[in-house]
Image (cartoon, rainbow, N blue to C red; front, side, top):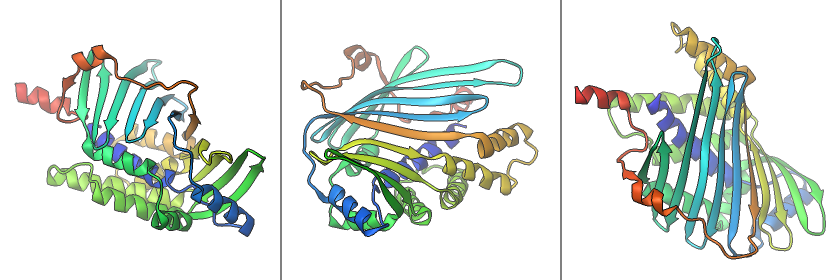
Length: 313
């Protein structure tokens, strides 16, 4: 499970980084002109706060990620929590809440997180590079790639101050971008078994993305050309990825896993929503001093506890 989370989270990050960079229409001429204007106009550069929510639902429970982040020039500060609540067939429940902080300054990134009563920290320079690239102002080549990535778009609301666009991505091109990203940023460089496991995970995710319809709603402020809100529907990707695993018969002999995948394939829901705010006063999200003092440095944010126990024996 730890290995699946590690590889899957990196793959999802790749999908989000690639997908969230492509707020681009390629439909009617008027819509295309409206998009090009929104994409190419220089945005006002000031301190902004981002509030993001990612929610995953199935009949037996939910998982939710709430994040507050702040962008300041080359620095990025984030605070949030990951909440899980699931019920089993016997009426029992699993609840977990993992608070975290992320601090990035140029090429350096430190992730602080708490499991149980213990704070730990993890250095992640490779993720810092990904995030810096994702939020950077796109150049002409990236703008062209953005336009090519989109299948359809519709300007659904226009006022003197705001413009809202509904965007449908080209799933095949997005899958190609995610595959290229993950090849350049492998989630696990361990054993041959690890490499084979990652290859299979990416195979199912690739099928899931290509089969799904992935859509965005994007609103920009026409006075500053900054993003106001953005929402993404990842439900199709999750459901189609689960179906790809089931079709491959890799869960034969494991009825519990098959039941879970069947539920995800037909009854799950995964959506992301982000709003950007401009604070009235200059402020900065900070990692609390007590967290910095108590956090223990770990080599890997995902640790296989079972292997640790065997080693101690």
